[in-house]
Image (cartoon, rainbow, N blue to C red; front, side, top):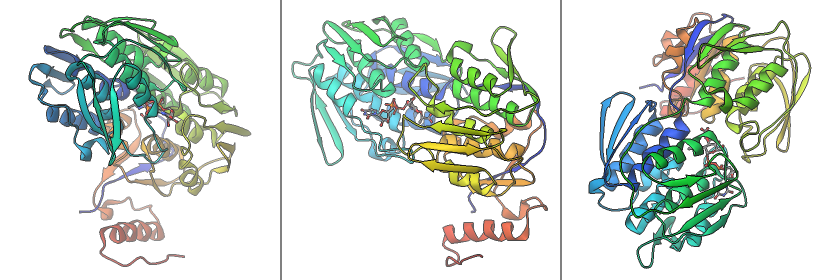
Length: 456
Ligand code: EPZ
């Protein structure tokens, strides 16, 4: 079985409405909040993604009863939670499952969760989570890659916590833990991302007393217990931003939604800066019209409300075609410029110096076989393929499917020529024989069918 690839035939403008699913980075943590109560929680607008399915497996491993009455609706019953040991083989693939350590300690007073490994974009340490849990009174020991935590006396105690960095995950882990702690917890230098606010709003719907969510200081008044709730996940601002860039890079007139515009201020500002027109459409959609020219701009990724790191690869793909040079500085993750090499294979002119990429605009990109290195890099390569001359083959789709729900169906719905292929012989005729050879050989080498050969 050959690994599936995406074939993107460039040069087609898009038109119509690109639908936006529920936010991956909200849904994942909302699911873990179900650990906090022994009632049923019902979450809607949950995107159907590999990562979300994995989180469901983690929760079931804890004894949470999980039902899915409809594709994007989850019912979670925490009454029979049995134990607090998260399975390594899932945590190692899904960093967000580590965030469950907070609600597990709050609800059960104990937790054994594997340290999440690093990933393509960085080491992804969790010392801010661990330090905060210790401030709340937990004993935490790490050995053999396992985080063993327990609460002497059984209940966490409210505390004042300062985060060295406004970590999204650490803020979420500690806010959940604090909802059942004895007393008041103050989290200073907290993350202000919309997904943190979404989690706070779910916890409040469950009876938690939280103030200041969305600012850098969150105050939580611990409760004895929480109750079940019904809640809808916010729209995915990163998917929505990716789709706005799809409109910009194909020079289209496109509607994207549902969105919450206030969650996308930095991305909308940058797209306007490069020449796009973006206006509200209906009550919760945006319309993007590409400008006559694509202008360069500089971008620095920052914690919210700064420009989101999860949109950096996508904007880089767009800026490879700007009339001039742009400087993109990645300040959040230490290794999130790996898409530069793949975009360069398509003809982009990008030089990396430390955490900055200098992107010099070129008149056009050319289709090529490319390999996705991580989730948002996958999106960037698809966007580049939508505008490139000829056909682009995006390999390593396992990253893409973690974070984008039915992306090729959605893009085809607005006129993109994109399809998922499992048989290399199906590749379009205009793939050059050399490219086809590269494609087939690469797959066969990966499958172990053929020794590696050098192709000049
Ligand atoms: C969340 O990751 C998102 N994932 C990421 O989205 C997103 O890029 C990131 O926030 C930043 O916005 C989920 O919500 C599941 P952080 P998280 O803790 O919580 C350092 C995507 O593509 N740090 O804010 O892991 C860390 O190394 C993914 O959807 C510590 O040093 O991000 C990084 O450099 C990628 N110690 C920075 O903080 C810690 O204890 C930001 O990490 C924790 C974090």
